[in-house]
Length: 464
Image 1 (tube, helix red, strand yellow):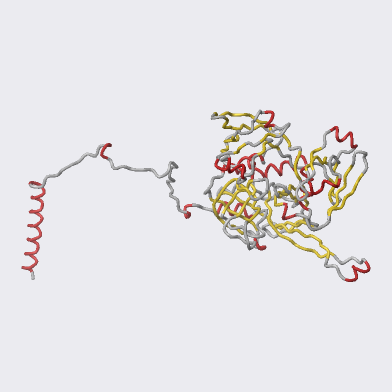
Image 2 (tube, rainbow, N blue to C red):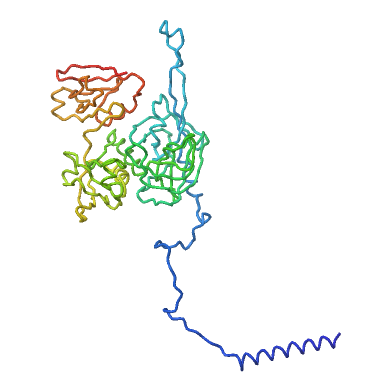
C-alpha cells in the first residue's frame, strides 16, 4: 500500500514539472490591444438614461405613501330623501306618501388641518344630509361649502375640534406617463383601500365633457369617487372620478381630475364663492368631420384654430384662423385636451404664452385669458350671454342671462332677446349656472323657465 502511494506522488510531481517547463520555454503568449476603432459596435435603443436601480417593481416602496394617504382619505355618506311610489290614495285624494331616505357613498380627501375636504360633485349631488367618517371610524356631519359640476369637484367642511391629517396638492403637470400612482378610497364601502397602477395617459378627453383627465390603470370601483390619486411620494396628483365600463365595475382603466384643476376650483370656491374660468377665445373644427378630414386637420399635431371669438384674448393677441398652436407656456400641445386641461387651472386675467406655427414660421404670442361671455346650454340648445350693465339697467335686474340664440325647435316661443331668470325655480346668475341647471333637466319630464320681456314683465313657460 505504501509502495502504491509513493508511486502516485512521484507521478503527480513529474507531471507538474513537465507542464511548467512547456509553458515557460515553448508556448508563445500573444497580446492584442483593442483600439477604439476595433471596439464592438453598440446601439442605444432609447435616449432615456437607464435607472441604476433597474426597472423592477420590487425596487419601489409604496408603504410610506400608502400610510400617509389612508389617514387623509375619508368615507363620504350622502343621504337624500325621495318620495315613495305614488299610491291610489294619493291619486284620488292628494295625500302625500312618505319620503324614503336613500344613501349614496363615496370618498373624499382632507386638504387642510382644519377640516376642508375635496370630493366629487356627483358624490354629494342633491344631498339632504352629508356625513364624513375618518379612518379612525369617527363620524362628523359635513357642510357643503361649494361645488362645480363642470369639473365634478365639490368642497366640504367638518368641525373635528382638532388638527386633522391632510394631503398637499402636488403638481399634476409634472406627472409622467408610466409613473407609478396609488388610488386610495372606499370602494364597495371597504374603507381605506389602496390600489397601485401607472399613469396610462394624460389630458384624456371623455365624450362631451369640456375637461381633460389623468388616465390610470389603478383599480377604481364604485365608492372610490372623490378619493385620492397620489404618486409614490404621497403627493396628491388627482381626484379619482370616473371609470369606463359596461358593467359599472373596474375593467382596466380609470380617470382622475388633475390636482392642478381641483386645486384651482377649491381656491375659487373659497375666495369667490364660484369658479372663475378663463378662455383663450378660439374655435376648432370637430375632429373626424368631413371638413377636418378633407383639409388634413386630423393629421396635425397641435390645435388648429378654426376661428377667433370676438372680444376675446385671442382677438386681442391677433391670433388668426389657420394658426396651429404647438405649445402653451412650457406644455406641448398635441391635441385639444392638452390645451383645455392646462387652461382649466387658470383664471380670467392670467397671461399665457402660445407657441404658434403660422405660414411656415414659429412665433410666440402672449395671450390674456378672459371670462367666457356666451355659451349654448345643454338639452335645449339655447345660446345665452352674461348680462352687460346696459342689460341690467334696461331690464332692471341684477340676475339672469340674455337669450341671444334659439334653435328652430323653440323659434315659435318668442324667447329671443329675453332675460332668462330661473330654471325649475332655481335662480340663474351667469351662463355657467345656466349650463349647470339645464344640464340637470330630463328630456322626458317637465321643465319650467321664468323670463323677463322687454316690458319688464315676467313670463313663465313649461316645456314637456
